[in-house]
Length: 492
Image 1 (cartoon, one colour):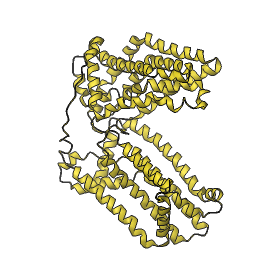
Image 2: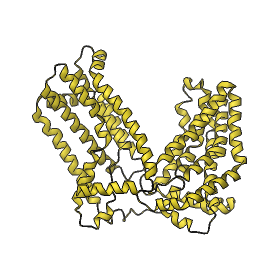
Image 3: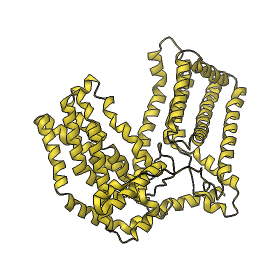
Image 4: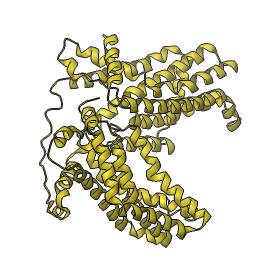
């Protein structure tokens, strides 16, 4: 049965409409994986020497075990934000004579194949070998390495339990971060010395292999708990019955002032406010608005005016970036219906442009208090807002014509990477890095005021030639129209 599951996923991967873009992302991620592998191998082979130099009067083995608690916490945080339970399209299988337990066992087993589970081994194994070469007992070190491997597996299954418990909450990461902070605080203030307890426990297991029964029992218990959770969700009608909630309506009469694009703007505003995934575009605005407070109060950045425009572009364009990068994937669930209507595509895109341009103007106005840190900051934000409206709105709309991944609006918003492809990665270059590069170039060659003038001129040029740019962007969308319809019809 496992062979059949692997075969189905293999075919799903290669037959997907996003295969071409997915393969590009996978090549990029392979280079990232090689980079981190090299770092962990370096740490593994030189850890003994590093610990000897930093803690000359202590046993490197004891010191390393004392750091395991912090590794466990960091590993859990990284997993929570970046590791998701590997899924497969199971609903078609539920109508076939396939046992649910086989599906669940395959999914849970597949989760162990994640790269994040192998990465620690590139440090643990070389460090263990180094310890053995320095006189530590072979049997003890083998048991110690097995114990750390089991800790990796425990974190793997513990993460999925945390994910399932917090899946329905909008800010699911807050309980996780608070829990980690509490554990760290208890250890830091010596209320409960967790790091010392874990260190002694791992050393006790390495000295007496009988205690391996404890981590093995923890793995078995976590696996069984995950198995129960997943099996209970594995029904054809799961997710059909939703929590009944009162729907709040708002008056969108003001949108009629925008003429023919008003219906599309109303559709977008309702979509944003009524769905979990799209609602994140609203809440993340607050983060972007306060982004400058991480930098401007620090004297170091006050002497870096060329960096102001990067913060300005991000702060005034946070909605533009977060919402715009998934155009038209937000409408993917009913895109075919939308395209079958007698509508002008340019009006559809114009409504997106207007919504993003309005958000930039509003965020700039709300960010005016940044003038408290200096007039140059306010000027940089003003220039960045003009650039966002004149250039970045058109760039992000053009990039949307390459989107081929469907978005499930009902999924939770926090750290959900569904629909993210090569387009979203590449858009960051023209949106953020190019304006900062242009500004920095003229700043160092001429001065701050000239750099502001150049960037503002580019934004004004984009506004002046807006109609011509929109015609070109519309033509690109019409060219890709049926490819997008075909891609959005697929669930993978």
